[in-house]
Image (cartoon, rainbow, N blue to C red):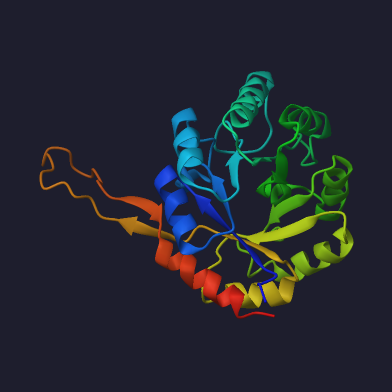
Length: 245
């Protein structure tokens, strides 16, 4: 019997996406700048990831770090990035925008949905920054979006599990709540049980050590290491979810 739980891995590079697939992920969210909450990856990163992974590939559409209130030029960037995702054969995009009062920017999101066309859509954690989560859920449902990535309005999904459970009940069959933020093999089962979410989102990241034997000693503070998804961590998450029924 297959697991009812879907595991999405947040991948900060094409290499991370390949590691996620190898570890047993069901879906990938591709982005860059993990340390700043994620921004849209480059055209090349998307194209290479699409060439090397067979599982569904979703791309984060976020033109910059910081808040989720966007101006006209940022809107144009997002629209063009979505068009590129369609051209490259991606399965979905991950979008979100708020107005200055902390409500869903319905007009902007409707335009993003329109340009996405046949692509599946996830509303990202701009949702958690909204003033009123139940009201925001209703606005997102009204846009026809079928999935919200959320930590229940808290720093991590473990702390927000009770809120997520309430939102799952509110959403009913209209859309899925996907729990994300701070999930690991130690807490993912409890978050799944408490929240009622059947879709879980984690980064499964680990520090990768540079193979450079030389580093200019004058460049003090330069860090040659980087963060990347680790297939072993993905496998551990998958095993935990496969044991849940």
